[in-house]
Length: 126
Image (cartoon, rainbow, N blue to C red):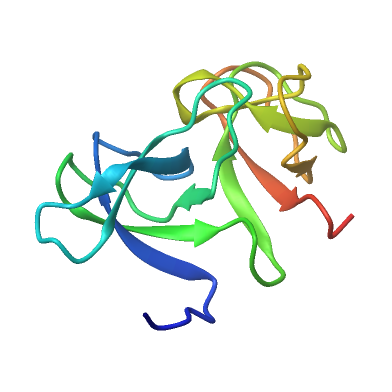
């Protein structure tokens, strides 16, 4: 097995995934037998990263890993979020400032309503 030293990794999507959604490890290996599956992270779950580009279910998806490197992530708000708020995984791959599970990062921009994109800096950097 090769060590991945980049900020992104390729997986197979278990569901349709939009840009900025949080994903978690899925149920196994993809249909090609080579890459693992990822699925939407839910409330309080531990995401592994964020979707870089929207894909349909069963397609290969690039995931920007939360655990590696510096930089920020585009995420999607589950509700209004203030600048600097601690962020947690919410339902449907979105983020919330309402405590649920572990803190995954902090908001570097604001979201006025559910469905808006905002910038996240991962936990451990701030």
